[in-house]
Image (cartoon, rainbow, N blue to C red; front, side, top):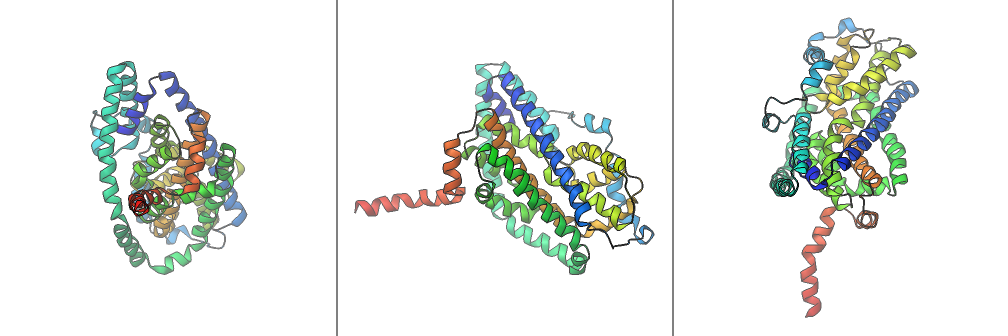
Amino acid sequence: FCTVASGIAHMGDLKALGRVGWKSLLYFEAISTFALVIGVAAAYLLHPGVGFNIDPVTLDPRIAAGYVGKAHDMKALDYVMNLVPVSFFAPLASGDILQTLVVAIFTGVICVRLGNKGRQIGRVFEDASKIFFGIIHIIVKIAPLAALGAMGFTIGKYGISSLVQLGALVGVFYLTSVVFIIGVLGCVGWLSGFSIIRFLAYIREELLIVLGTSSSETVLPQIMEKMERLGADKSVVGLVVPAGYSFNLDGTNIYMTLATLFLAQATNTHLGIEQVATLLIVAMLTSKGATGVTGAGFIVLAATLAVVPDIPVAALAVLVGVDRFMSQCRALVNLVGNGVATLVVAAWEKQLDRARLTRELKRGPLFVERLEASNRPIVEQSTAS
């Protein structure tokens, strides 16, 4: 809330806000479409589900029942109505990112209309965000310990055999994600003037945290700080990154089409061209509801399967054992995609310091410079001596 509201307030121009907004949405939809198509292509080229010959009758429908029930509740009207919070503070207390985004946009717009007084309020939000960023930094330092416990629980409960059984799907998903990052996002980065490899190295700390926690939301403050450090304007970062967490879920898009076709192959269900086209369209919409929902990727997959009734819903139970490991990859791709989107939109708006971008990517991640800064007085003192 603080970063979006202060970012819009600092813009001082509603036209600039609208311009950044529509450019961001245009980019999100274009890249999301690439992600969906790549997921379909990977399923048809590599056939991860062929040979499983799963009989849906042998599956326990109760395993997926909870997710399916939530998915059935995700109707279009309910999704739109859910954007409107019951009160100003309700989304801040519940952690609903979409509602928080709506409240923050309204607040930022009003700040712009208030003129100088609004800019002062925006500075208050900016100062407040430093408090919350500081809290997150402390929590993240002990995140690896929590991630160790979570991963140990997953392996202990589901066992190694479940990973071996579904290793083909997991492997194809990770391979497809790498191709998407290097191929699609790499080309986008190259056209925008930066290397995707250097960018990945720059945010490697955040990638490791996301890998352990299976959620890109855990590094929201850090990724915003690094985007600003790379030369993107604060107002652009404050709007594009939080919006991307709701509307630019590239990893989730790849997962939905790949997993749906995997289940079709595993249950020997034939899908025609029309059904696959319908799947792409529906997945584009359902993926936008993935943020702020527990087990989001799995739930939106259940909602997407509703448009392909030929695939038995009980087949979702097959994916429960490895969803934790696939959610790690989803979160990693989502994080990288949102970072690239921020730099691209900033470049479109001519709000990107390219000299600083090149310098920072060559220099390395944030902690290296902090280490250099902490050692500099000692070096200067010994030189003077």
